[in-house]
Amino acid sequence: DASRGLAWSADGLAAGGDDWTVRIWSSAGSKGSGGEARVQRGHRAPVLAACASEKGVLFTASADGEIVTWDSRGQIVSRVAGHSDCVW
Image (cartoon, rainbow, N blue to C red; front, side):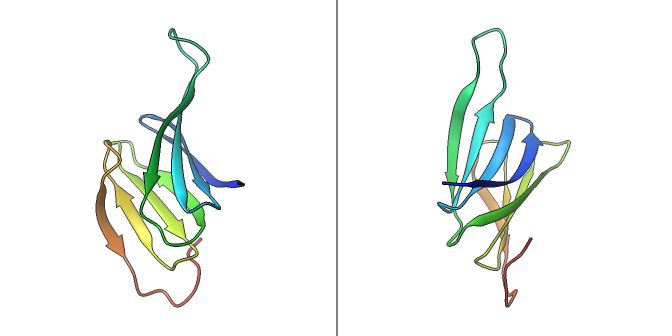
């Protein structure tokens, strides 16, 4: 599946996907070359955009018309719904 909406988060690279997920990829470090650290599920359509705050909060936007806020553990904190079209 295609990756969209890349953003550096506290845990690594966050990538929105056409498979409706947000995948967090760890960066290369002392433990090896990095890799997929976590898959976050919560959207109902492809994830088109991602943005991370300095405090470890991740925001994602989707073709489902929602913006989802995630905490640093990958749990959904809130949703903003009501858009009549995709959110980029």
